[in-house]
Image (cartoon, rainbow, N blue to C red):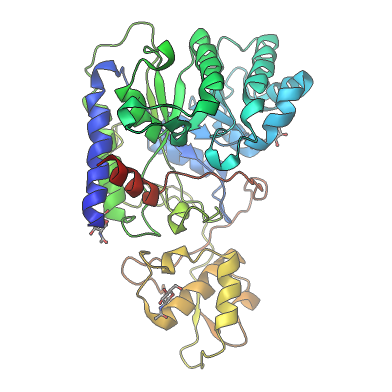
Length: 447
Ligand SMILES: *[C@@H]1O[C@H](CO)[C@@H](O)[C@H](O)[C@H]1NC(C)=O
Ligand SMILES: *[C@@H]1O[C@H](CO)[C@@H](O)[C@H](O)[C@H]1NC(C)=O
Ligand SMILES: *[C@@H]1O[C@H](CO)[C@@H](O)[C@H](O)[C@H]1NC(C)=O
């Protein structure tokens, strides 16, 4: 039943994408690069990974210095995000907007600099669950930032956009969708601004379905649309697995490729699709679900999860090169010890490290009780940079040089963050990605 519905979801998404082919110009494929991971690859390693895979567009959730520096001179097109938390200040202070543009845009744009094409003002700031707290900041922030871009002489090359989530929509029937009543005014202003500026409307997955059925919304039917986030997680829930993720993402890309021959629409920039996402992020909030840490087409360490032809020149994904792994050592449950007192240790380990694959629907669910313990111990041990003390747990853990991975269940080996970018940024933005559950609910509701 579940399977059937998910297949329907894939079919509906693809069908709607296909159905829109007459209005689609040449589509570019990019990726979302989020950095909420405990142990991160060096930004330069990630940038090389993108280059090896000929990925020419990237969407970032904020301006991290090391990331921006690594992108300089690469020719990779950047959509640079501003976290919602910054919108209040930027809306009230033109000086703060000037500073933001100076420090986070101008500083990286010069000869052989970063190719910043869009600035995403907030991330899904109209999400219902934010209770309107960012609503009134968006347009004033846009105005201040636009002025700042003009002053910096960048207004011609850098466009302001706002990634919107599906729930900006409301309707009894999706094809007759309209924006939520409280958003009508701001959406009208936003679309007017984008249109006058030649900037696209950015949607994360679902509004795209409705928008396509309803191209003339607010009287701007010719408005180019970019999909800011679309993808499928590979773990952490029923229906989130390697096969399903591969089928979805390859189907998406194939559709995009099949449009290459479509005549360009005059005067409208190409529509881009940013796959969500490039790498797994093991430090993300699992409020939306365990799958939230498994959206990557690559694992956190830059290993491809499955063969995927992005249509950019390589038949398959290429793994990251020169990844600096910690030594080949894992921490597992001691075979000889009595594990009756292990619960607390496991709890501590999994409250810090990522154990999401152990749960129902996950790739490591079903490895047995000892397997569970070993998995938790190891995740914690790797997180602690293989500090021997972190594998003790009152004598319950032992270090082994044999990879304990079983079948599809992958025991991680940490990567060094030597020379890596600054410590994990404490982004508090909750991104309620449209999760599988929601997909199922929506489809149920449509049918
Ligand atoms: C630049 O962006 C970073 C990341 O979002 C932010 O922390 C910082 O405050 C910004 N700089 C300025 C001057 O606003
Ligand atoms: C993966 O999920 C799909 C549904 O999304 C299901 O049909 C398939 O059986 C699953 N595969 C595995 C190996 O669990
Ligand atoms: C392993 O842990 C998972 C997640 O807590 C749990 O669902 C599963 O039942 C555990 N397996 C055993 C054999 O205890």
